[in-house]
Image (cartoon, rainbow, N blue to C red; front, top):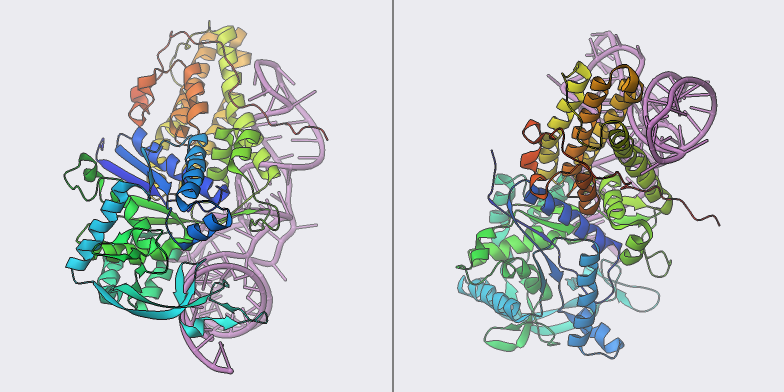
Length: 515
RNA sequence: GGCGGAGUAGCUCAGUUGGUUAGAGCAGCGGAAUCAUAAUCCGCGUGUCGGCGGUUCAAAUCCGUCCUCCGCUACCA
């Protein structure tokens, strides 16, 4: 039953031509929760995140700021790394595409694609959008009233005519389709899969994969006038991170990745180009690509001009790390777009964390402290209601596990919080405070059962709220080595008589400062 | 234009092999209780299940059509 096989999970690497925003934070938090879950479940986990530092946009931003590209990359990458740390992410590595190891890896995969006969040189002429890092055909563009030509995404394009290497993407249409067919879970959620399939079905054109107009990138092997198209280089980070091209590296056992967590805007790169590159290079394909949605501030897309850009550092500062992590993962169905607002965050913090879970812990633990000698209470014979709530808690693991395997983080949390609510109902129904005088043994049993349910909830919620759940488990005197999922269920029941520390609130209410 | 998703209580959403009075959470109102972070528990919803039409003994759930929103994609110019 215990599965200790490797589990490799990645975020997309962030493009550091600006500072981190809530979207980056969201992806990092969600991926971290998925990684932690598997770790607690006994898997050997490798979790990679990082920054994607090449490309023309970086060059332009650097010029505008009067910095070298290296200096800009250095400065901003550090911000992303700091964000990941601030968010409590458990990533095993933080990769930067400007690193030497990554240059080596990218050149190696390039060479493999050359050897496979999938790279050829030609002249490219077309409309190029720097902002989108994409070419458009003439009819995909339009000249607007301002006299500027815009591409399909509404960004300015310029005419580019250059020698370029091409990747024979057109040769991969059938193999990609066959792969989607044979691996229905390759792309999630389903809507995204449909989009990719219908895109590929329409036919694929060869992809321009090098540039000669600037040099901030990875040189093409044997033709250093060219640097690789930034996406070739960026996608390759996923294998660089586990040792490629050294396939004897111990890390290489993590490949293929179990899941690439990405935003829905870059599905095509991950679900079409990336697998095609890998097929060409003779490397196994990742098992799954999962695209999350976008976050909106009160229903509005964040933008600098609207002035509603939220800094992840400020968010953590204002509400607390675990609170922020819980909010985003519980409030937004993972894979769909979501909304956030001060009111929504406060509501979740107070309703779910302070009132439901925090108070459940506090009310039961303080009764234990005052009426059960401050040790794990004795557990007498179990009543039907005791058995029911214990069974519910014991069943949580399978539910959460099934949900997390599909990245349905919100489903796992919903199940756990249903149990929290039922535990409160159980506690109120059994009214241990009333048993204090009439039947102290029964009171102890009720307190024991409640504490045991909290133990399991705290263990299961660790991936989302590592620090807070750790504190909760401290309060239950659960040893550090007994906090794995293997300790869930009857096997790990609390031991009566174990001394408990004085109860202390773990989830404070959030109270607005009175204006 | 094509394809896909969505449109269900004030808010966020669940709910399709069609079948008892359409559900949950949050918010709101009333009550109970007092172990607890004024937290908890119980009770309270006359919702055209986007509109119209159809199939059926029976439709939120199937079919047709229309409207709105979102995504992917194409084309015209």
